[in-house]
Length: 107
Image (tube, rainbow, N blue to C red; front, side, top):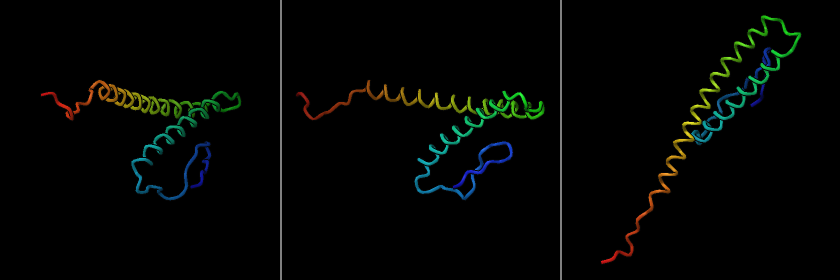
């Protein structure tokens, strides 16, 4: 798939859907990639706003888009954080529970 850039500088993908038999793996990878792409876009918007030669209306549009991106990225980070907490808690619970092997029982 080739990346194309629109007039605002954001990356758009051309080509068909790339889903295959490993949809669970690819959805996780694509979610991370999508997060990274949105973060790159936010950084680009920040750079554009800092330029002194940008017209006010373009700066305002970039700022609005940046705020929306920042909010969605923050929500994604909160989801990731809660998932990590769940995984860590389940790992701790599994360690605390010692397996009982009844191979050699005392009688």
